[in-house]
Image (cartoon, rainbow, N blue to C red; front, side):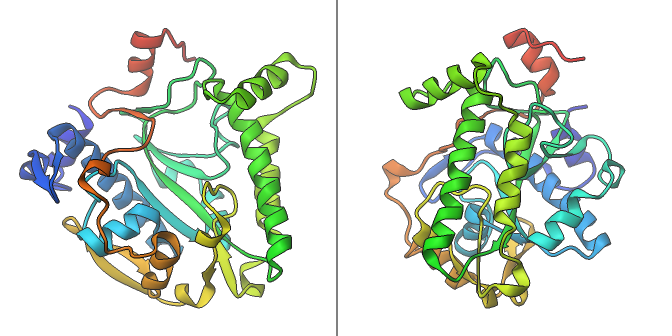
Length: 310
């Protein structure tokens, strides 16, 4: 039985959900619907564990936007993002894996040597969601991203220094782990780090990223943001903390998801006029991951790339 079949059999989604359809002038394929079903199941399990342990979280990034604007997935999106206050995030990482159980795997650099991010992911180990790299042998199941929200320094310049330090370390660690970035500077960094001339440990680098991010405690901050990883300008990553004071639930496909009560403020900072759709020609999946919902990542990577797992 595939994971999609299990999810339908358990009533998590019904069979009709998997049918292709056109949403907002974008064709959502049957394959995309399978991926969404896997991600809804990940979100269901995550919510179950968080409720059990009293942990706060909110839909973030495109998942928050999807809940507000589409009442579900953005039709051209292909993943789930959640945000957690740092205190709750750290508590989550201390939970034993048994809280999730197979096929779910809460992934960090501390429990997966080849994992390549400073934030956590919840994976379905019976599926494939992989960024191709000959160096990467981590759990590559379909995933949801889990980001800690940290306090921001009231001095913008000091916060920019912290963010720059994080960005440099993330660049080095990603170059070390992947070695497939087309930018020349990234390829050079990768060769230097892989040569052993400069001692480098990506796990320690990601730990340092989190220590930098935690310099300003949530309780002491008036603004918060995602510090451990942020590809955009500072202007799109500082939110009033009071926007997260309360939680409201919005419909998301056939379930509901928590969003911060000040979600309009958060989405304006992120996207500006967030209710405005992008032009039709710009609607498309933008992640570089390959998804195979019906095959586990070990089988897929072994057959396609010769990857050997212990």
